[in-house]
Length: 584
Image (tube, rainbow, N blue to C red):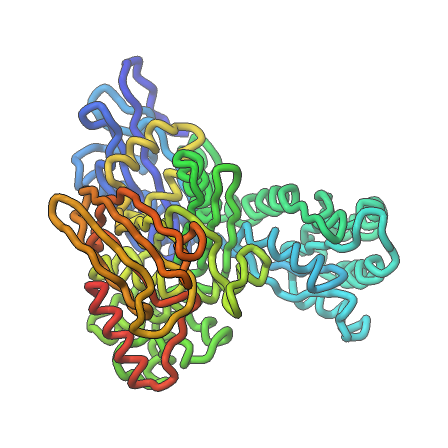
């Protein structure tokens, strides 16, 4: 704890929040201005979680020192510790909270019966934390027993996650696989004691504990699949999250010092971002889709007023893990999003260089186009994996997000895009969402930390959001349906103080209509019989929308799912047109 003595003085409370990422550490100061909470200052420094520092607190201290330079407000004492609470001379801060995505992911060995049942459910639960799946053992595993035992030893798991079997169902088949796990654990060194979580047939709990407790710490969670038709993930998610915080976050050097400053635990960034998405969904009574394009991971959040589903895709980001993208897709899957001629070799070289130098910024138009093409591909890969988990519905042969009212995006690649239209186009291309929704950007990188605050200080979070800490990009209308290129897809009329427009939107086009930021306009949209904006085929809607940074209203009539031309020249030409139409 800090050595500063609290002063007996009546005043409002101030907040300092930190987001310790794998590339940058961001710190922001919130305080009362004119009777409401506002973002006072925000700064970002390179992370110190990795070599040569290996101390996450150093980066936070550096960022706090910069805030002191900006504001003139002393926040650290001579020993480098946070001054809490605020003193009578105005130095210090009342509350501190932190989130992190810099901790190492959990190395996991999956054990189950069938890939399409128990293993699929296990992967859904594990996507709530940063993790790497090192190997899996199932009934379909054709390796002989000695190789399965070797796989347990070679995977060096932090966690062995065992699931399978309905409650009261067959027992022997799962126990056969667990026996291989036990043999592998028995030959591992004494210094390695992995955690085991059993979330399978409740009749096997005692037997699994008896078989494995000599070699590992065994925890029990509710069966993920008590019947073939039902899936219960919440208890397993709780156990896995607690293990991740204990094994990875709390083991980071410097975390204990941050913990001493904080009023609560240091949360994973994805979980905190899910918290703020859930908070906004409950506040506005609508679904919220969150997209976090990080340096080492991509997180997708689908939040409703009742709950938030967090889907973390580790080893899939814009930093050191960028090179793993080419293990998932062909280089041409990245090139297809580039509006100028770039060879496959140049594209691959850019990806590998980005993984070696994650701090590098785009210094010319070609590098920017490559960066944004990689961003599109990463988000599409994360969406596809979320869909394979059964979280998103299938439209034709392509997965698409379920309907939502707000798309909330964050990540330095998005925040540093030169024009708002580029941000919107990246997200629309990657996700191909449908319906009517607003888009907003966490430009200052503070949303996860606000999510950690939300349950304790809701007033500060509400007022900070209302004060404009989010950048409103604009509204989107994206109908589903297919038609002929150049034929009418819908009629639109827009009335505001600055604009009056009536016309039709052709299928295959994306167009943006100017509504000044903060200004309102009456918008009427009437699709033709083949298209649906969320109210049924051919059903229209009149609404009042508010303008954003990208210009106001985007109508994306490219169809869902849309397809790209096979001819490279035609495809590049179309990309340039879409970019031009979006003001990018």
